[in-house]
Length: 459
Ligand SMILES: [Zn+2]
Image (cartoon, protein in one colour):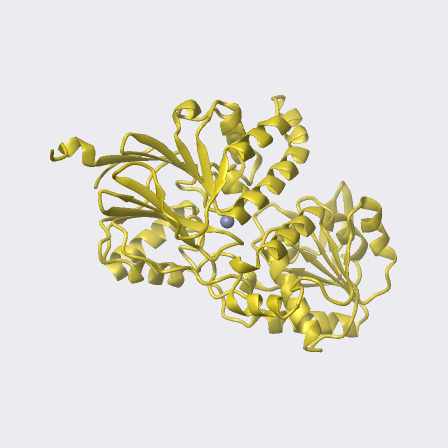
């Protein structure tokens, strides 16, 4: 019997990350199923974070499946809350994404009491919700097909953004829709390149750098110069770093520089318990790394540990770093210096003209990292004033996202069947700029949806 036309329609609703970077949460009603892609936290200013406590705009009990693209908080952070609010379906991701997500949930839980107290509300979830979420979670390798109904299947491709990161493709009645998640700044030192795949009809894509490109530079050379220059002056190199991907790339690059004798031997402290645990997961899944890293791993290179590397687990370990002789390297969270152990190192060394603060990631407005990056010579930390006399350096090459030209090229490669492109997961102006470029230069129908929009798609 032929299908009725009604059976060919699907509905896509943008429940977050439309006109903003964080809070990815997309609902696809298709083949009689309710499917979510990502369930992330809103991050940034206090008013953005307030949105995490707003109830879901759909009934979590009615959701059949949640597909997860990768383990950054803005893509996974509200999964335990979804479960707490009644979700009983299945969660799918790659194995590294599940393992890293478990660490991320625990870490966020540790910080959540304060956030909830400030707002006079209950925490978003508790320990038992994390365990429940993980019990519903199945892992699947790249390219393995998940059959959802006779007409609908799903599979994931490598996005090259962080370990285990995926794009999810849905095939319904022979037509395809792709959710990119975040797309990596391919090629990277550790990960495989973003995969190119068969042409989708509908594309929902990230737009973080939709309106700008990254400067071209050899980041490992730049890192080497900064380390050598500071070492000559017997100073301390402070690297505020995100726990996932950035830290492992920096460790890997330092490892390679040490092995090639391109920098002198000196102590390097990894002062972030979360980053240390995530690094163990990178070691557990060498098959998810690129050929070069995999080859080194097989040849016995531990990839992220080298002579001089010291792991600071406890607070006392962290404080003891102050007494270690210079030159030395300290890698500590948080990446934008708005908390975490990097702050007490900053208090120690910002005033030292022989020290260097090396910024390797995006610094959001209002964070201590951004204030120092913009050239402020006196900063306030814990209600005390500190002079900034150290060198301040930025390496932009470590960005984890594709720049604007790469995003355009990504769509150009797969444009043959494209009917509609939705630019999301970026600031409004970045999404708008990217959509314009895609229309003008690639000739596809690209648009910028608003939060709450429900769009009809014909398969
Ligand atoms: Zn991400």
